[in-house]
Image 1 (cartoon, rainbow, N blue to C red):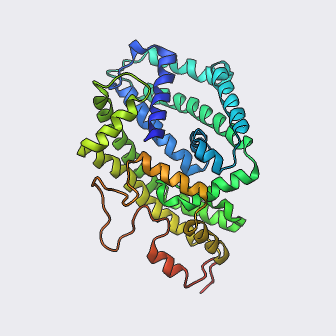
Image 2: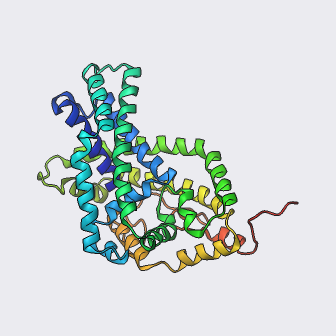
Image 3: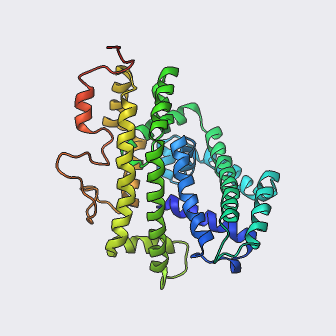
Length: 344
């Protein structure tokens, strides 16, 4: 949810900068479609692989994670300075400014209560280009600032916690030293599951819209400080059954899809790579342990159970979304070698 809130803020900030707050209505078709587009774009970023650096940038603000990743205070300060520099210079970048001004012109000519579909799609397309430029600029800073050893630790952590992630990418498996043949096999699997992934995006985006409406309503009456959104969300998770249900549905739907996707990826691994993957998952690094603890805290979960407040629960014998490797698959896979496949 924190990532989604960041994106909502970023979306509204870009529009406010370009058009003025008086022209915006959160419930207008333009803003609503823009938020949906933004949610989908963020998830596609992880699906394509480059969104991982965006997630890492947020993680580095936590001193425990920096320590486990061996990122010094000086190194983090340098990253922050570069990010701040990009932020301050972004509007003057020719490519960004061209897209922003073109979008601003279209927004000013649009009837937001009865928008022209073609014009609105063009506005959203331009906005996606702006956000893509922002995210790739920031993620490049983070990636270029880390040592190979730090990148290795981070990628190993991603594999260890893949059961906690709603979207995974073939790029995550690169840490296992894939061959060109394996990369192509994984690309084929990804292409095969594209239609299911697009359906997942639409479902998640619709649910996020419902959550954002409940969240705005929950903020009413709270004191105006920077933790207002966090305060409202925690209150809703505790007290609002509908919010909890939608929140859990977003997570569980993504993880069910991820389970289907990752087990197909597992089939591509050699026995040696498979053993290495199991080692990373069964004996997680200190970094993985810290990140997992913070993910649970962010979701309001106890150490004893993943869903103490109710909501979705797996049936007997089913795969738990949080399990990185379904036990039935692990047992079956450990009895055979699988890649490269033998011809019958």
